Length: 245
Image 1 (cartoon, rainbow, N blue to C red):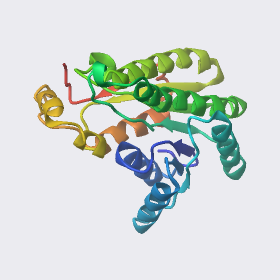
Image 2 (image 1 turned 135 degrees about the vertical axis):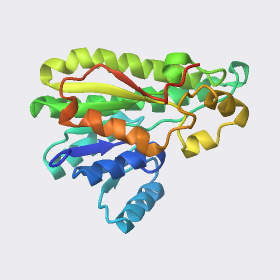
Image 3 (image 1 turned 45 degrees about the horizontal axis):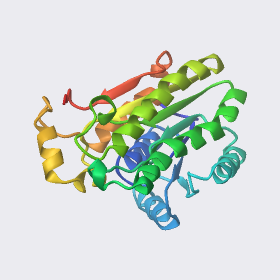
């Protein structure tokens, strides 16, 4: 479904991002993953190689636009084009507001929103020049329903939705589609680290009777990245088993 496409995936060393890397590669894309550290990037690349999947990796500081721009330009020079950007890097939070410091709130906004802005700003001129591209952002079910604590995380994901819908309108004339995937509770390390008292009540709201698997979410990214979704832009696709809060 993605043969001949070059895809750049942030937060691609584990969880949903790693599953997107695998699925895109299985569908014949040239995949470049971004991670937060050299060690995690190299580990992911080596593990994928054992599965017969060859990908490339980088580890720029996504909060530093100059570093991001330099890395994106290097990728464009190496591969000739960038067709798909998946903004998946992010962190969660679960503290009550009175226990959340300004620095913690700022860190969440920096990685979940500012870094996304930097990536999009860097690839947009390239996609405009090649007259098309796809930008996909990871949102969350909490961007629709909120969550009982950890205010920084849903705040950042509400921002992701606004960014997605606005950029879809701005970039549509350049044939650049912008969509987001809003996963529900998914079986990743991030969810496993959250307290049971936060997760268990949410699981009870899922009519399908289970939490999602990373491949469930990756399938949504694959569809939106492919030409099957060529007339879809500005959407927030919920992948949550019909969960409602």
